[in-house]
Length: 359
Ligand code: NAD
Image 1 (cartoon, helix red, strand yellow):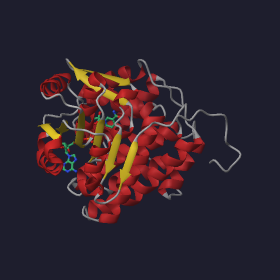
Image 2 (cartoon, helix red, strand yellow; image 1 turned 180 degrees about the horizontal axis):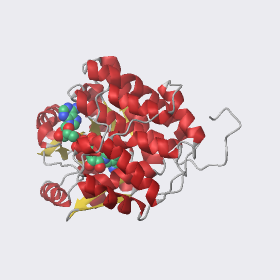
Image 3 (cartoon, protein in one colour; image 1 turned 60 degrees about the vertical axis):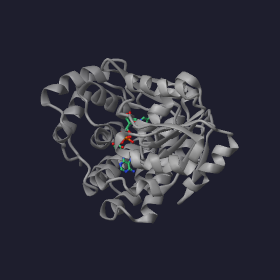
Image 4 (cartoon, rainbow, N blue to C red; image 1 turned 90 degrees about the horizontal axis):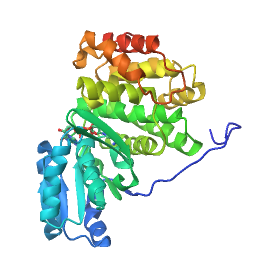
């Protein structure tokens, strides 16, 4: 609330990236490539998005030196090593990632090793393209780093690339984005500028997602959702995250639960846990959701309405994992507005496991 009396001292650090937004923005790709004088581009995708990658590569013609469609969830280092062989063999001078967080993660992993410029064409709402964060996995261990080299230089947000995102993935990916914004609103290093982005990001996604699950081809909702995802991703890139992201990191990393679905399940419980400790942030979430109910209740209602999973049991967690997850979540905890204690965290995970209805 920048206009109120609550503006305290803060530090705001802008991250340098060029964002091109709009229907058909992909047509601007050739100009961007020309502007950077790129001649040997490597186009990245997952196996499922080979077609989209080939279409983009065809549009760029001889500027594309190679394509690699092996991107995978959680950026496995062996996949990056295979892509690096192509980078070296073809004197690659930039990467172009078309896809969600997995593909953009591979571009980032290459940039970490080479500092090559990156162009990202996001096709989900995960937001990785706006962050200097990279998570990589090796021998079953996920490590996360923050490094300016991994921030993509150019991001082209073209809602056309999200038209094919299935309704279920649109719902969970959108909630994943909302989670960045909720935690950004109560971040230890939060500030009024980032809070503006976070609140508006939630507002845009909360309005768009119910429409998208009914009508995945609705252009206005696709545009609004991608705009919201940008703002939520920018929030994730700008400020530190808290309990929610720690829990999702633990559950995804140690129990192999799917990324966006885990975020969808945990978010209402994390919001409930922090509600009394971060009242101003939670009020902003309620404003953005347009609700009179507590944010946690409204977030759970939104997840149900858009058909996202609402229990850890439903996404493959086993009941005997609750204790181990609680142990891991309280070891090296992230900063959180409400202090972390093992009993409360175990109770939160047990509630999320069962999908307890919040009131
Ligand atoms: P994803 O990139 O793994 O995509 C999921 C599946 O959907 C893939 O098979 C993909 O090919 C397919 N897909 C993506 N867009 C599609 C579209 N428009 N149409 C049809 N199919 C499409 O999923 P995600 O949730 O975007 O990314 C998850 C990964 O990103 C995780 O590894 C997570 O850790 C990482 N991530 C990193 C950050 C960061 O800042 N470093 C932020 C968010 C997520």
